[in-house]
Structure formats: structure tokens, C-alpha cells
Amino acid sequence: MGKRIDLHTHSIFSDGELLPSEIARRAQVLGHQAVAITDHVDATNIDCVGNIINAVLDIRENWDIEVIPGAEITHVPAEIIPKLARKARELGAKIIVVHGETLVEPVIEGTNWSAVNCPDVDVLAHPGLITHEEARVAKKNDIALEISARKGHSLGNGHVAQVAQEVGANLVVDTDTHAPEDLINYEMASNIALGAGLHEKEVKKVLRDNPLQILEKKGIL
Image (cartoon, rainbow, N blue to C red; front, side):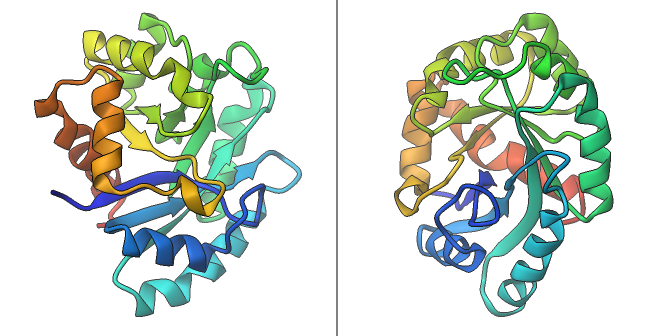
């Protein structure tokens, strides 16, 4: 069994319940190799990326887990996603997630399309009823599509997995953690991938190889 890599979690810097240090410690105990803290941002609070960076420096130096500063661009006009992604990157975010068109929230139509066309985006989270065309563009631009462990957002997992496999887009399994009980171990993540319709032989690629490739590309691991 491999070590988990979770590229989508939230701390007290947005709407999460946990300090970055508690996310890191709980993730470490659950067998994570790396966890990204990707708090919700729009133009009003994007500077919180700097707070996350400050929070994780001591963790990196003292604990055996890689904690990655990031941001999740959330509920913004689709047209400004590229601008905010560039800004987050400039502020030091290593992982850029976009809050996709989940089935359970009124995300602005066009968000998925804008995200997959933005080279600064790494993961399109819980993209709901993503189209084949959007998935093809995600593949072209090396943007991963997320299978979500989060209640509600997970309702689209089967569709996301099927479309991604049909066009060859990369998938990752993330938790979208907001509370202590949201973090999961490798076995549970594997079951979520299988529940989304993936074959057992594809699980390691989705849980380990794909997120590891994202981090290696950025020189993080």
C-alpha cells in the first residue's frame, strides 16, 4: 500500500476547522507523503497564500511530510480565473485548484471551461457534469480532474471518471478536507476510486502516480 498525496484541503485561513499544523499532523498519522493546503480564495483574500507559506515552513523542517502551500479559486467570475491563478502563483502558491461546477453548489457556468484553459491551474476540483470537450482540453493542458471524497461533491464522481477515461485525462483523488474527519487513508481513497468506476489496476495511478507527477513537475518532490 502506498502513501497518500492529497492536493486539496482547507484550513482556518478560509472555511476549514483546522490549523495548517493539525492538517499536516493528522495527514502524517494517516500515512500521507504530501498534503496541499488550498484555501478558498477570490480577489478579497488571495493574500492568505502568504500566511499558508509562513505556517508550513516549520512543519517542513521538522516533520516527515511535505506540506504544500496552494489556493482554491472559488465562486469567481469565470473570466477572471486566469488572472487570479497568476496572482496566486506569484504569491507563492505551488498548487492551484479551481472550484469546479459541482452538482451541489451554484458555481458559475463556464468555470470548468475557463479552468481547463488556464495553464496555471493544476487541478479542476469536483467538476460535476464535465463535458468531453472540457476534459480533452484538460488533458491537453495537463490539468488533473478530481474524484472527490467530499459529501455532495462526490455525486459526480462516476461521470467524471468515465469522461476522463474516455478522453485520457488524468484523475486524482482528493478529500477537500474542512474538518478532522474528512482526511482519509490510502485504503479509503482506493475504495472511493473503485466506487467511481475505476478498475483496480488504475487505482495506484490515480492515487499516487498522477499527483506525484504534478509535484515532481513543480520540483516539490
